[in-house]
Length: 279
Image (cartoon, rainbow, N blue to C red):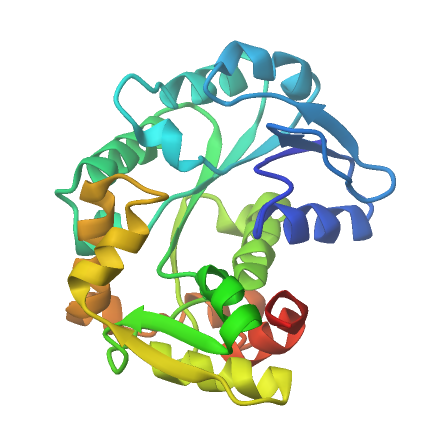
């Protein structure tokens, strides 16, 4: 049995579906009740209380671990989740980390994630670590303004990074959970090319079949909007990446191609699949 945490989100949902479709027994873990594919067991649990995962982990062979943002805050103990998994007899863990542990290793959340990677490596379980960059699904931040005004408002309109489709992250995670060849691997996951916010707006417009304007925010305007849903420190950190990506953050990784035998999906594919969110 495979346990998938964050099972109802942008990565966990397609991962759960993919595993179920190939006949795997799957336990989907989420904080709230939500629909899951037929044949998938659903367990409601809060990862902030690792002991509460024991019913989900009972009898499990593998674990996909995705942490929500609050589990990187002061006082959180995600390493205890690894301990619970090992104590429950889990043989393999695939951790969703972040490219930032390499590109910007000194931020508090990155230090914590690097420590968690180290915990996974020394857990005695088989392991793989996935380090994605920016997500295509972050464009959903613009959904309300596109629906209401046909406007994408974002900073740094002509500065891009190679964002990745969460479905590709899920596909790589499935491969790591099912195939021994990926044991001990660390994969950096990006999309196929650098794409700017202005270009993303154009792709959304094409998916909708109607014009979408681009409005460039100042950094301060963007920070004000972002701090409504994240700590100010994280907003500043995110804006640093969006405004001045490093060479490592601009690099297109070959790892999706290496694992899946195909190129990563472009943003236009993500926009076409998710057009309903912007209508």
